[in-house]
Amino acid sequence: MANESANETARNIGPVILLGPPGAGKGTQSKQIVDRYGVPQISTGDLLRDHVGRGTELGLEAKAIMARGELVPDELMYGIVATRLREADCQRGFVLDGFPRTAAQAGWLDAFLEKEVFDNRSDKREKCPPVVIQLLVDYTQLLLRLTGRRSCPTCGRLYNIHSQPPLVDELCDVDGSKLVIRDDDRESVISGRLAAYETQTRRVADYYRAQRRLVAIHADRPMAEVTAQIFGVIGRRFQGGCQ
Ligand code: AP5
Image (cartoon, rainbow, N blue to C red):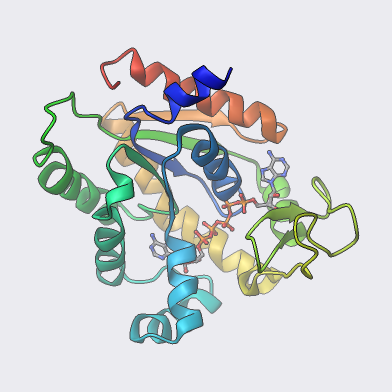
């Protein structure tokens, strides 16, 4: 078992894109991929919230947009994603959580990977195009997940008061911190986020479907079952040449 796990964390898994509406479980499942394969999670929502928290120029611009549940303009996203993808820990692969979110972002990502990732590889291994996994969850379940979400401000662990409550009400199991509700998990903002998904992000699924790269899975199942489906999809890519 220890050997199997060591093998997984040495593998080149390439880019993995988790696509899905707010509350579909992108963050939850990204953490499982991180644990198994030892590649970083790149959550554009977390990157933006970090900028908002630090009060950077980008953060000041993004704050009001995020508070309305709308998408931050594509041009503002490219710089932070490019900077993060150029970091050394992304070499064996990475999980994109929340990016791309528009068809333009998907096109930008393809061009970026081609130019800056695949062409620069010194080891001449097979290039691994992104595995794109779409998490399908129905609307009622999404609402329950978003309104019930709590997170630890210290360690980032996610909870849900309906499906995954902490052992002690409102306190993190790991470090005892008081759990917080995300600003945009208020019902008035959730409707805007779901609308942005319908009008802009669904097209990203169409983009990858047309390239025959989209794998849709039933993400309304219990977390461990969803994880097993995702590991199955990633595992199949090794049979396609990525090692
Ligand atoms: P972002 O932070 O990306 O939020 P999101 O896409 O709305 O997704 P969430 O984080 O809400 O949900 P999730 O799918 O990760 O679900 P989770 O695992 O937490 O974006 C925030 C904002 O930033 C955007 O609105 C936009 O303004 C901006 N932004 C970000 N990226 C951008 C981009 N590329 N371009 C432009 N703007 C951008 O799970 C949710 C809950 O469900 C948790 O409580 C969890 O415990 C529970 N749960 C998970 N799986 C299960 C399961 N199988 N069964 C039961 N409960 C489950």
